[in-house]
Length: 230
Ligand code: DX5
Ligand code: ZN
Image (cartoon, rainbow, N blue to C red; front, side):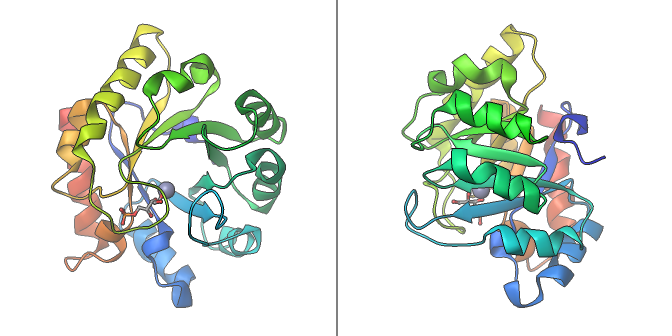
């Protein structure tokens, strides 16, 4: 069963972002990172409105659903997650992360995602404080702290997001919850240690996995090794 809540909380897990894959042979690229040890798969959905870029939609997700048994960790960088979440779940998304800065009412989006049988996560952009997600924390399977401005792969990791990661980790601990804490943007062998030490247990990695000159297996293994810093 593809369920993000069944993935370990006490180890670093790796969610390769297919935004850095070769879309001309996406099925083969997904197989490559799956065999290399990916724990789940990160799907970056952009609408050209919430962020200034366009990526993939439900038909693509439906196609790759046949090629993978990994949890589809779907990151909606779109303005209207309330309307579109069920459509992505129908296409094969197991987990939906939406942005607290989007136009929809967060509680309504969480309810809609759960009603359609998926797990919910909330993401915060770099300028959004940790506290904005606290009212929803006990209903979430995951919180995503962006470590770049959302919109593009291949940007540099923002070190100054680490206090936010730690503040959310502390709140998860204080309430005794099991919630994954994900970071996304610029995660690679040289930044994963600091992210894990700050309290992140789930690493999104696009460029450093799909385009690693040393190969995806080495890249994912290096990211997994940061478990020792949790
Ligand atoms: C950025 C996306 C990220 C991005 C990560 O808006 O949400 O998932 O693809 O790419 P890298 O790992 O290359 O920074
Ligand atoms: Zn993402």
